[in-house]
Length: 308
Length: 308
Image 1 (spheres, each protein chain N blue to C red):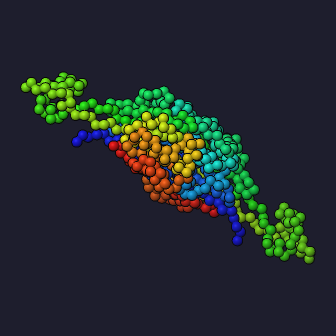
Image 2: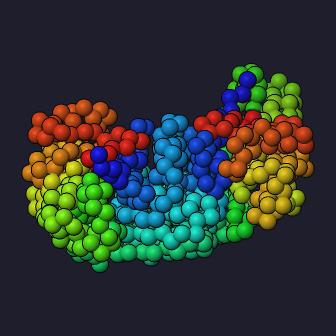
Image 3: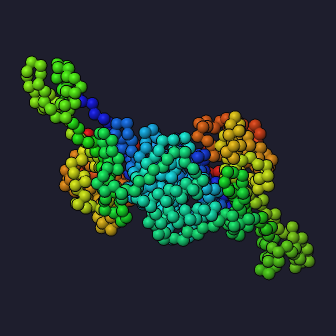
């Protein structure tokens, strides 16, 4: 069995606009291997991190989808807490440009001179280029459809290369140069003259996994390519279908909209979030979505959803 | 028995700098009769208001003691929630001047055009004049001693006037003009010629009650006049006495400092707050303070402390 990096999302808040007794404002932690990424940071995110024991370790990148307060008013306190706990590692913030001056203004008014670098990245500058990338993993942003400029984020493993069979390695113990050649696509001619094709001595890589965070968005089928085939998609479902007119007016989606999008984009699993305070029970939203797209879940705070 | 306006403070948060699993950032609600005042507004204040069922009704004045983030980062979300719930009543904010531009900046970046008036008042402008006043009650601010300009707040009943005896009113049923004259200090000559002095036909007013919020402050005996004789004082006790050097360096107080101040200022009751996250148990702080000033309590979130 191949060991894969763990890949999961933990919901810290899934309330829309205003918090309720049971639901906090939007934030979630995406974790891939040892890397951890915070997506949105509504007021109270640092409190939710304490509650659900989400450590600050290896949390060096924060993504803010858009500048409605329920998605970023927790950033000031979180940065302050990083500072007070003696953080020295740089912190990268990816957000719409207007947040940069505001962060500077907040720090200046609060008399805070950070002991760590705050590196700001304007989401508008990336286009198709990854906002984050390492050897195995990349994150891209894409525009969604909301009242103000808003971005979704796609977290995905890179396509792996074929791995050399262990049995082959054990039998022939090829030298480094030969291994490099095989990795680059060559076959192998054994000392006894037997010839192996590249595919005979290598194994197919595992399918790369992906998670998409759709942020606040209206239902717009043109977004489907960004979601296509994802293993897990978090999509807003602010309202139920009885409030479709309000959803359209506010550039939000209903649970049915989210499910239609998931079905069209052939995603594996749909996680609903960003629920209006008007919905005290979420059963109706789940039923509504499942009637269109069966593999739907209601996101729950503090729960870690694996991407698999 | 005379019926008095209810007068109390409800603690919403009493943590210093960073929140912990059990303690939220500074905020408290002072209530006098039907008037309600919010003092400081750390991140999560609106969440605490939901948790402890503190309604937004008649909450029209917010006081911010100083511009360290743990005392005002919750203001943005609270104002946004007022807006989203359709508030139309003006809201008055009393704070250091630099907060005004920052509030405007936050609202602009968040694309929020409030449906209610936000009236900003610079605490530096008041001097000895009340920051709030009605017929029975007034609030004044006073400078305390911290790293940055910081204000404490005194909430006090005004001295009442002597009230006319009910028995006297029943016996002689004086006309309006006579009642006015008595209220202004006159005595009374009855139709039968009997003469009553002013004090014979009136009752002394109840002693006016007062509550003082000391905010973040170093121990400084020159502050005692502002606290003098108060029925209840909330004083910071960030550290215990073993950390006195740190307290002095940071312009904070220890539990013993708070108790010394309370004793010197002859206050009736002392409520400790603003506890450092280093203190997981608060028993030591309570003992330390009580050894100097017996009538001390550790403030607890969600608890309503009457001023009596």
